[in-house]
Amino acid sequence: MIKKGIILAGGYGTRMSPLTKAVNKQLLPIYDKPLIFYPLSILMLAGIKNILIVVNKGQLNQFKKILQNGKRIGINISYIEQSKPRGLPDAFILGEKFIGKDKVAMVLGDNFFYGQSLTKKLKDCVKLNTGCKILVHPVVRPELYGIANIKKGKKIVSIKEKPKNSKSNLAITGLYFFDNKVIEYSKALRPSKRNELEIVDLLNKYRKKNSLRAEFLGRGGAWLDTGSMEDYYNTSIFVSSLENRQGLKIACLEEIALNYNWINRNKIKESINFYGNCNYSNYLKKLIK
Image 1 (cartoon, one colour):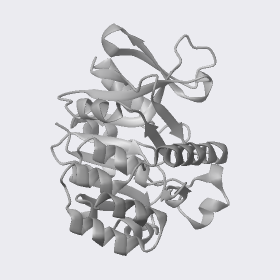
Image 2 (image 1 turned 45 degrees about the vertical axis):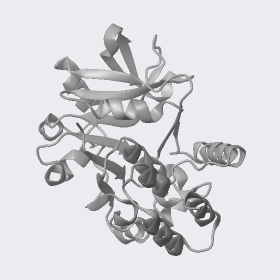
Image 3 (image 1 turned 135 degrees about the vertical axis):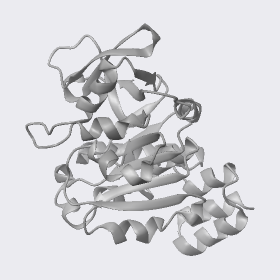
């Protein structure tokens, strides 16, 4: 069972500059909540309470100001600074002490997931015993993504980064589940031409060991990468439309924690005081009426 998770919230966010010159991308709002709430909610829905957030050097206090140590929402949050982006697998090298001898999940800080059966899929994924499991989702333009070719039994036979011609349209999303060998494999990687450790190279190590499997987000699910301004605003519109139509919040951390009995009504009141007079607080008030 995976009980630890990492959120990679570093990077320069150059595609969203000049906004990201002043504020970390993961702290910008997706409708009424910081972007970081959404990947954090994914780990929480999976039942993961021990979480490490990898942040840029000098931005630690920005994250602590909103999330603190996680106690208010019934989890444990720790942080580690990354001096400069060195690729996704660097998170496992930086987080070696945090991971210890355990298995670990990782979600990218700018990825958004939504789906009716998503929680069940997440809880199935954290039951991983050995190897690696990744979440895949069909896309219209495979040439923009890392694409997985999959045979029966959810076995991944090849991975191609931004293929010009591909029979598969299954993109590798930013949500991964690893056994403890991820630390050893990450340390053995060599930097690519862009001088970074590549997630595709890490996944291929598992594939060559015949221990890389896929899980499908499903036709009714949504996966959005908020790395560009267009995708960022599309995600915000998506969340706004759903919340205003349904009257239910997506990625309400306190609601997840309350439903899992990680916190009580008093912690909800504490959060209401923390956020102040706002729509998010008004939603929290409804939870404890």
